[in-house]
Image 1 (cartoon, rainbow, N blue to C red):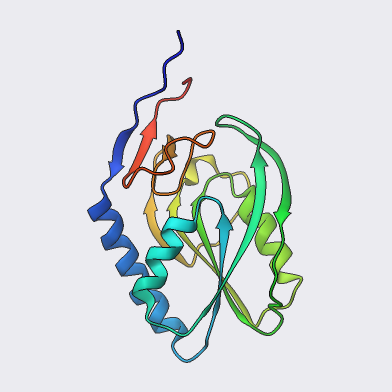
Image 2 (image 1 turned 45 degrees about the vertical axis):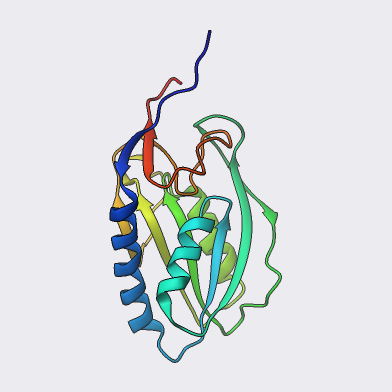
Length: 177
């Protein structure tokens, strides 16, 4: 019988809250008076983005984009596609992309190139987690919560085949599950 893997905590909800508050202070300082548009990458970034916005105390707009490079399981297919496009124009706007994890860099790199073509006034990236050990494409991260080991992460919006997204902590599951 194949049982569900048991997630183990990597970062507690308290550590996550401290990182989100730290990032909000950095972002607020850089965007004061600019009215940025924050673009969350669905589905994983929604919890992080909601908490970040609560701490930002800025006039801003919120937008979401849906991208996919995963089919099922823990390995990326390598081919990125837009599954839900933007509804707002970003030309001439200050854009801050909110990501849950930068892993291979393929999906994030694809999105940043896609957004650059729309000619924003500025384009920056904020990610809660970065896994540089798996990088296949270079990605410049402007605001970073945590650098993480080469483990499959779940919780706080991150999922494994749509499971574990609800966990309040960032956890990992062992490969081969």
